[in-house]
Length: 158
Figure 1 (spheres, rainbow, N blue to C red):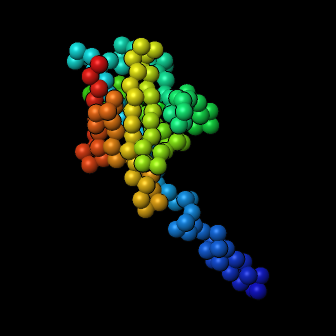
Figure 2 (cartoon, rainbow, N blue to C red):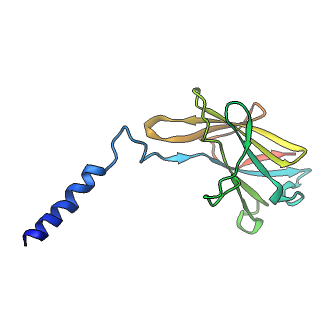
Figure 3 (cartoon, helix red, strand yellow):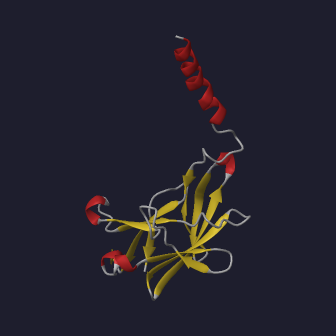
């Protein structure tokens, strides 16, 4: 019976000793992705390009680095949602925005190369309050194209 009490005490006290505190980031919520649809002359642009050729680059403060995360599901920094799962929007591309190199003004830069000749520069603005990291605004080439308050897909007209 004493062994059971010790074991029970261990099960109730140990988790408290190793649990998160407010200064630790183990409980951080990260929402740093955005969904794009693209149209050219009213047609689904992403159905006309090599979707496997899309490349994502993250700015590290000096240069843009090609995203290569072999240990993640989206190893190239994006995933494709096919038309049959996109509610009639055509192809949707979900891009993971740069959270590796966030500047002191809570912004980061990501470059999307849809093709070698079609590149968009994306600036993400983050809310880092309450131990969270949440994108609240997305700008492409300096123009706001998405805000957290409006939500939805980013529609690009190519």
